Amino acid sequence: MATGSQAFAQEKAPEFSNDLMMDNETYTFFIADRLEYSFISGPNPLVWDAQGYIGKDFNKVWFKAEGEALTVGKEAEMEFQGLYSRAIDPYFDLQAGIRYDLAYSRNFNQSRAFGVIGLQGLAPYFFEVDGALFVSEDGDISANFEAEYDLLFTQRLIGQPRIETAFAFQEVEQWSVGSGFNNVQLGFRLRYEIKREFAPYVGISWNRKLGETADFTRLEGGEVGTLGLVGGIRMWF
Image (cartoon, rainbow, N blue to C red; front, top):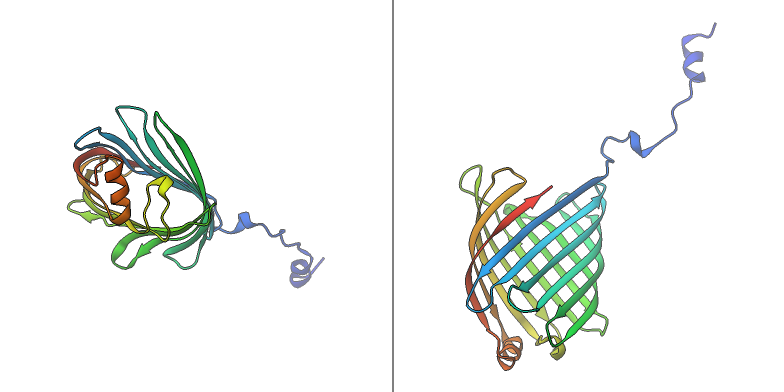
């Protein structure tokens, strides 16, 4: 009969597997932060802004999609991103990948691709921030930054101020983009969370094109600034 120590030595430890690690689960997440209809002067657009990921604690694959389509006429602008994301601290991820833009109307159809490097996470005081630098297939460099914050009036009634701006280092006339700051968007949305995962909202949105980008818009007969009400749904799972 083997002694206790001999029996212990003869036991075979199980082969190592990541599945044994309680913190090595694969997670999936999707959120449509904005799925809304805008009430502005002129044609009213549908706007969407969604993103999600699949991956583990430190490494994930993200996708992001946003765009705007007019409800009258065939005209839309869309942006898609596919990114590899690596956690660099408990609150921020470093992201890199590709972006693809598509714009079309009755008279034209164009697209372009970018390389992307960005930073996304939760800044001090619980501001959600997302900033990225883009280099197009033609070597044009631009950047984008957005931030939002949740104000809890009650456990279900939540206000969300939001700001977004974009900057271009070169003029890209084909896309009506001037050098410098292109635009600024400010908004405030008030949502009621019927469930945490589903919340209708109403709000106000202001969008102003700046500098050379505003000049391009005027030449094309477009509106440089818009102010309007929005209504939509925020959902996640």
